[in-house]
Image (tube, rainbow, N blue to C red; front, side, top):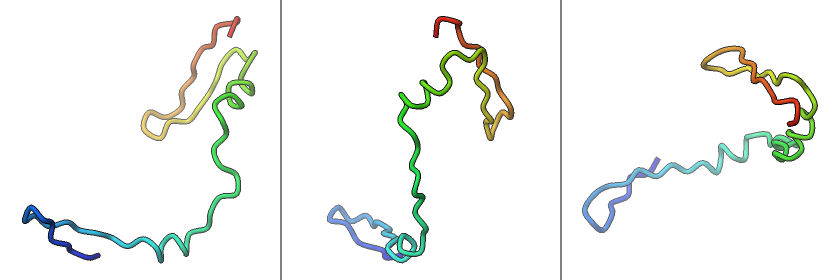
Length: 65
């Protein structure tokens, strides 16, 4: 961490994340495109997901969707 004085007299805290980024393993499979997700869940009656805050949820889907 580096504290840098700004021109207006305030200070700004800067953090250098280069070493952390170098040590982080990148995920080879990024999040899918929205179109691919929607194609995958198409023609299903219900879409389920796990929300970290609310728990298990279900979203009803209209048959035409």
